[in-house]
Amino acid sequence: MAQAKGPTNLDLDDVKKRMAGAVTTLKHEFTGLRTGRASASLLEPVVVEAYGSQMPITQVGTINVPEPRMISVQVWDRAMVSAVDKAIRSAGLGLNPQADGTLIRIPIPQLTEERRKELTKIAHKYAESAKVAVRNVRRDAMDLLKRLEKDHHLGEDERKTQEEKVQDLTDQTIKDIDAALAAKDKEIMQI
Image 1 (cartoon, rainbow, N blue to C red):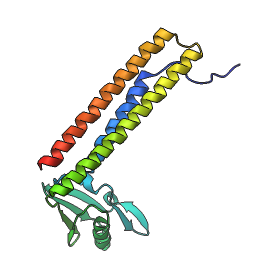
Image 2 (cartoon, one colour):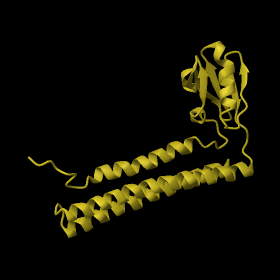
Image 3 (tube, one colour):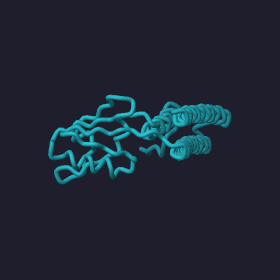
């Protein structure tokens, strides 16, 4: 009994899902870009040295956004307050936490024009990475279609039809990325 050497067709739903994953990742990365508004996701990259190991900040306290320009972290263990404070300061987010018992308040400063421009450059870099990921998915799909045609699993007309569908998915996903980037640029520049 001979084993199949690979797929015998292109799963367009899988291609669509992989491209959508690039957009989802991009939007998640955008939430980490500080735009002057407080957001609990701003502290996601913070890792605290706790109990002899590295832990995400969400495992040592509760993050809240009581005001548009304030984040608070209610630390569960009083002994961890200084470690959480230190982790926030050293995370490279430009934040200056203020401890008050087990509550740490983190005021979000206004963005300078220079910082806004820097943030838009970072946003563009994230968007370009997402576009590269989408193009890689497209390339993989196109290569598979050519291989399927060569192996006689697909006729030339069917290959061309499938390639057009893949290209349409690619174009739509790139438009989605551009729209997300435009929205983020507007958000960064108008705050």
